[in-house]
Image (cartoon, rainbow, N blue to C red):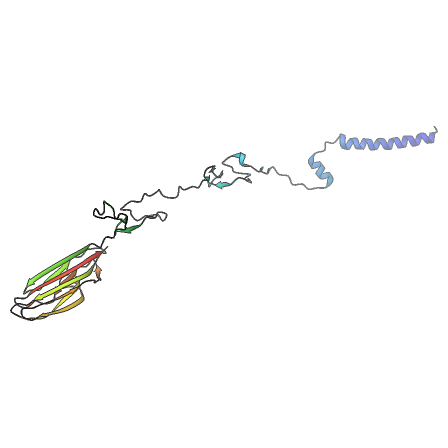
Length: 270
């Protein structure tokens, strides 16, 4: 080989050696780390210590606080998530703790203080509590021959009466107090003249006590000697004021030897 050839061999060898040395220097002598790669390729990569939560499934159980992307139904209890409860027999279980306790229908049932309580049986309000409607039975009506029919009880009524000889009869039902109102259902007033004729006399039904209160209705009576005259009315429904007496009375005294009477029947509302 000539000197010329040796020179080229040395030149090429030196060049190759330099390249190899550079590669060794770059990859062998320098530790390549993540930032260095980023710098080498000219990228700006955000770095943070925050880790994403793994998605949780139902196998994680109750009291989950993160990763709640699950297939099973979960309910929030105000602090954590819990799996919705259920059973094979009844399916999903429903929380009924906010519904007040059960009520067994019975008489004297007080008005409920919560809206979700209701009276499901046929009943009636007696002014204070609720009672079940009665049907005919051996207990409620011993003489009945057909049991099971609805038993209708008439209103409880009262009656006041007064009579006088040559006087001013007056019969009054005292005030019931509170919100109680008296209702007149019938009146009966009569005069019977003996040796003296009875001139026209007025009889008043009053919303109030004797001699007081509003006159609801009036009637006039007169009777010749040895005769009598009466006014008998039923089927009335004349309601008085709350906490007020109701009175039937003659507005003036009857004639001498005249017998007079005043009668009032009614009922009272709560």
